[in-house]
Length: 173
Image 1 (cartoon, helix red, strand yellow):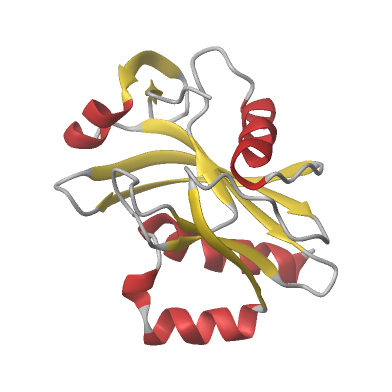
Image 2: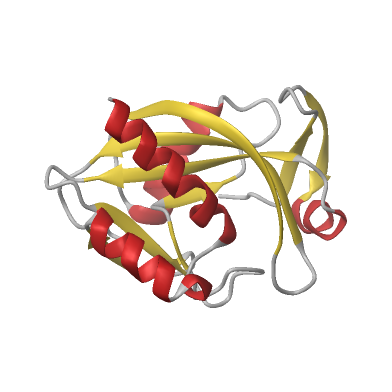
Protein backbone atom coordinates (compact mmCIF):
# COMPACT_ATOMS: atom_id res chain seq x y z
CA UNK A 1 0.00 0.00 0.00
CA UNK A 2 1.88 3.00 -1.32
CA UNK A 3 1.49 6.13 0.84
CA UNK A 4 4.46 8.19 -0.36
CA UNK A 5 2.47 11.31 -1.19
CA UNK A 6 0.19 13.59 0.78
CA UNK A 7 -2.61 15.96 -0.21
CA UNK A 8 -1.77 19.57 0.63
CA UNK A 9 -4.85 21.44 1.84
CA UNK A 10 -5.82 24.93 2.89
CA UNK A 11 -7.13 25.80 6.37
CA UNK A 12 -10.63 24.64 5.26
CA UNK A 13 -9.36 21.23 4.07
CA UNK A 14 -9.73 22.11 0.41
CA UNK A 15 -7.20 20.07 -1.62
CA UNK A 16 -4.50 22.12 -3.33
CA UNK A 17 -1.95 19.67 -4.75
CA UNK A 18 0.03 16.50 -4.09
CA UNK A 19 3.50 16.48 -2.58
CA UNK A 20 5.98 13.79 -1.63
CA UNK A 21 5.31 12.86 2.00
CA UNK A 22 8.86 13.39 3.25
CA UNK A 23 9.15 16.77 1.52
CA UNK A 24 5.86 17.94 3.06
CA UNK A 25 7.18 16.97 6.50
CA UNK A 26 10.52 18.68 5.85
CA UNK A 27 8.78 21.91 4.82
CA UNK A 28 5.94 21.72 7.35
CA UNK A 29 3.25 21.98 4.67
CA UNK A 30 -0.37 21.60 5.84
CA UNK A 31 -1.69 18.27 4.57
CA UNK A 32 -4.61 15.90 5.09
CA UNK A 33 -4.35 12.99 7.52
CA UNK A 34 -6.55 10.69 9.55
CA UNK A 35 -6.31 9.15 13.00
CA UNK A 36 -8.31 6.11 14.08
CA UNK A 37 -9.22 5.21 17.67
CA UNK A 38 -10.56 1.67 18.17
CA UNK A 39 -12.19 0.76 21.48
CA UNK A 40 -13.43 -2.60 22.71
CA UNK A 41 -16.61 -3.25 24.70
CA UNK A 42 -14.65 -2.86 27.97
CA UNK A 43 -13.78 0.72 27.03
CA UNK A 44 -10.13 -0.07 26.35
CA UNK A 45 -8.30 1.71 23.55
CA UNK A 46 -6.20 -0.28 21.09
CA UNK A 47 -2.76 1.34 20.86
CA UNK A 48 -0.02 0.60 18.38
CA UNK A 49 3.68 1.04 18.85
CA UNK A 50 5.05 2.39 15.58
CA UNK A 51 7.68 0.24 13.90
CA UNK A 52 11.20 1.31 14.80
CA UNK A 53 12.08 1.89 11.13
CA UNK A 54 9.42 4.62 10.61
CA UNK A 55 10.80 7.91 9.26
CA UNK A 56 9.58 9.58 12.43
CA UNK A 57 7.88 8.39 15.59
CA UNK A 58 9.56 4.99 15.38
CA UNK A 59 9.00 3.02 18.59
CA UNK A 60 6.47 5.53 19.97
CA UNK A 61 3.00 4.57 21.14
CA UNK A 62 0.05 6.11 19.34
CA UNK A 63 -3.61 5.66 18.45
CA UNK A 64 -4.74 2.51 16.67
CA UNK A 65 -3.86 3.69 13.17
CA UNK A 66 -3.00 6.89 11.34
CA UNK A 67 -2.01 7.76 7.81
CA UNK A 68 -2.60 10.06 4.85
CA UNK A 69 -5.38 9.66 2.27
CA UNK A 70 -4.15 9.92 -1.29
CA UNK A 71 -5.30 12.37 -3.97
CA UNK A 72 -8.91 11.71 -4.96
CA UNK A 73 -9.48 9.12 -2.21
CA UNK A 74 -12.48 9.23 0.08
CA UNK A 75 -11.10 9.75 3.59
CA UNK A 76 -13.34 7.15 5.24
CA UNK A 77 -12.48 4.57 2.60
CA UNK A 78 -8.77 5.34 2.96
CA UNK A 79 -8.97 5.06 6.77
CA UNK A 80 -10.86 1.76 6.61
CA UNK A 81 -8.37 0.31 4.13
CA UNK A 82 -5.33 1.46 6.13
CA UNK A 83 -6.74 0.09 9.40
CA UNK A 84 -6.97 -3.34 7.80
CA UNK A 85 -3.50 -3.00 6.23
CA UNK A 86 -1.69 -1.99 9.43
CA UNK A 87 -3.71 -3.75 12.12
CA UNK A 88 -5.73 -6.45 10.38
CA UNK A 89 -8.84 -4.86 11.87
CA UNK A 90 -12.10 -4.62 9.94
CA UNK A 91 -14.90 -2.65 11.57
CA UNK A 92 -17.17 0.29 10.76
CA UNK A 93 -15.63 3.69 11.44
CA UNK A 94 -17.41 6.89 12.43
CA UNK A 95 -15.97 10.36 11.78
CA UNK A 96 -16.13 12.41 15.00
CA UNK A 97 -14.12 15.61 14.38
CA UNK A 98 -11.19 17.15 12.56
CA UNK A 99 -8.46 19.41 13.91
CA UNK A 100 -5.32 21.10 12.67
CA UNK A 101 -2.02 20.84 14.49
CA UNK A 102 1.60 21.79 14.00
CA UNK A 103 4.40 19.95 15.84
CA UNK A 104 8.12 19.61 15.40
CA UNK A 105 9.11 15.96 15.61
CA UNK A 106 12.43 14.14 15.44
CA UNK A 107 14.78 14.11 12.45
CA UNK A 108 14.10 17.81 11.80
CA UNK A 109 10.60 17.03 10.50
CA UNK A 110 7.39 18.96 11.05
CA UNK A 111 3.90 17.50 11.38
CA UNK A 112 1.37 20.04 10.10
CA UNK A 113 -1.84 18.17 9.51
CA UNK A 114 -5.54 18.64 8.99
CA UNK A 115 -6.39 15.46 10.88
CA UNK A 116 -9.74 13.67 10.52
CA UNK A 117 -10.48 11.54 13.58
CA UNK A 118 -12.49 8.31 13.43
CA UNK A 119 -13.85 5.94 16.09
CA UNK A 120 -14.53 2.23 15.82
CA UNK A 121 -15.33 -0.78 17.97
CA UNK A 122 -13.51 -4.11 17.81
CA UNK A 123 -13.21 -6.93 20.35
CA UNK A 124 -10.37 -9.12 19.11
CA UNK A 125 -6.63 -8.73 19.12
CA UNK A 126 -5.27 -7.31 15.88
CA UNK A 127 -3.03 -9.12 13.43
CA UNK A 128 -0.41 -6.45 12.90
CA UNK A 129 1.68 -5.72 9.83
CA UNK A 130 5.20 -5.90 11.30
CA UNK A 131 6.52 -3.47 8.68
CA UNK A 132 4.23 -0.82 10.18
CA UNK A 133 3.62 -1.86 13.79
CA UNK A 134 6.13 -3.04 16.38
CA UNK A 135 3.62 -3.93 19.09
CA UNK A 136 0.07 -3.31 20.29
CA UNK A 137 -1.85 -3.25 23.54
CA UNK A 138 -5.30 -2.59 24.90
CA UNK A 139 -5.38 -0.02 27.70
CA UNK A 140 -8.08 1.62 29.80
CA UNK A 141 -8.21 5.40 29.61
CA UNK A 142 -7.41 6.04 33.27
CA UNK A 143 -4.19 4.02 33.05
CA UNK A 144 -3.32 5.62 29.72
CA UNK A 145 -3.79 9.17 31.01
CA UNK A 146 -1.54 8.46 34.01
CA UNK A 147 1.13 6.91 31.79
CA UNK A 148 1.02 9.82 29.35
CA UNK A 149 1.56 12.31 32.20
CA UNK A 150 4.43 10.30 33.64
CA UNK A 151 6.13 9.36 30.34
CA UNK A 152 5.00 11.85 27.64
CA UNK A 153 8.03 11.14 25.44
CA UNK A 154 6.75 7.60 24.81
CA UNK A 155 3.81 8.89 22.73
CA UNK A 156 3.41 10.63 19.36
CA UNK A 157 2.69 14.35 19.25
CA UNK A 158 -0.65 14.02 17.41
CA UNK A 159 -1.88 11.34 19.79
CA UNK A 160 -1.24 13.57 22.81
CA UNK A 161 -3.28 16.34 21.13
CA UNK A 162 -6.14 14.20 19.83
CA UNK A 163 -6.77 11.95 22.84
CA UNK A 164 -8.28 14.63 25.15
CA UNK A 165 -10.71 15.59 22.37
CA UNK A 166 -11.65 11.95 21.79
CA UNK A 167 -12.27 11.49 25.53
CA UNK A 168 -14.37 14.67 25.55
CA UNK A 169 -16.40 13.33 22.65
CA UNK A 170 -16.95 10.00 24.43
CA UNK A 171 -18.13 11.76 27.60
CA UNK A 172 -20.63 13.83 25.61
CA UNK A 173 -22.01 10.84 23.67
